[in-house]
Image (cartoon, rainbow, N blue to C red; front, side, top):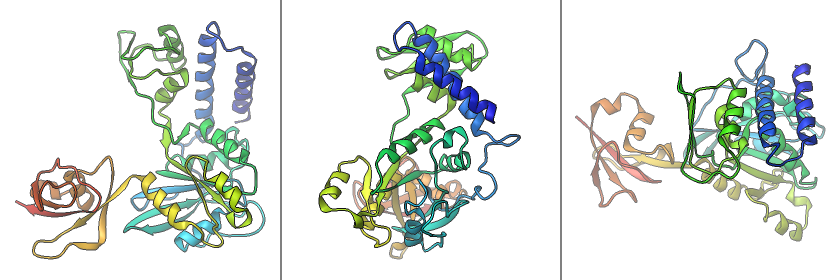
Length: 365
């Protein structure tokens, strides 16, 4: 692993020495591709398949998974204990949590898995500490809480973002609109529907050749950069994140006003359980979840146990499959009450798109 880290450092040093201009863009593009490949190699355990390692592999449960990422001793374990009731070791010294500690948060009828990860350190992306295992687990999350100590400089925020970026995790960003498909023959076929100001065919070919890809269709639907292209080839992960700024009981009102100006931030006090309502509301919003209530024939809707769906998978068919895979085969139609219905109730088919807090009665054949 040390040799991979050495190679990474050599490439980073060469990139730092190279002046950025049109003449060097081809060279920088190939260096970035080499760097991305090495980071991926560093990420994959020797003789393994990319898992988290002992104490890190945790089975997924619930409708979503939230990972707590942060420096040691910022209050991750205290926050988790207060939110879930799960005991995660809490002490006034660094590196209390040494493995992944799972818990379950019950909110709006949804079971959401929470993972308290060991404290991250600067240089994690280069193999320091348990960074590789921490980030491997973070990649499997639906949402990341970046837990920061409000008393310490917000440079911590930048360091953690850099570590996660180094391992291909993009926070609060949308994937670049690039269509990419490998072929068996025909060379590189590049098309674009918008003007490209950062890339040309030679640069695209140079990056693809680093991955030994000589036949592919690439269609740019955005003004992409070399980094965007590498993201698509590497299959980078795009995850929403909330910056949880802890220990606000130790700062002034004026300082709190400044903290509220940080995008995606929620200030809290885990110890006093201050501002948990705002944190949970934003969590629900960033997870993009909706609740659908079931209504058995001739009975009132069951509001105690909603079926929780994702915003991008909320058709009646998705609803049926989340209850049981076999329901679709017996499906005749559904009756829907709520904001997605044109009248109450509306008779709909499998393709009908549901809204939050709709009520559904299924009618079988």
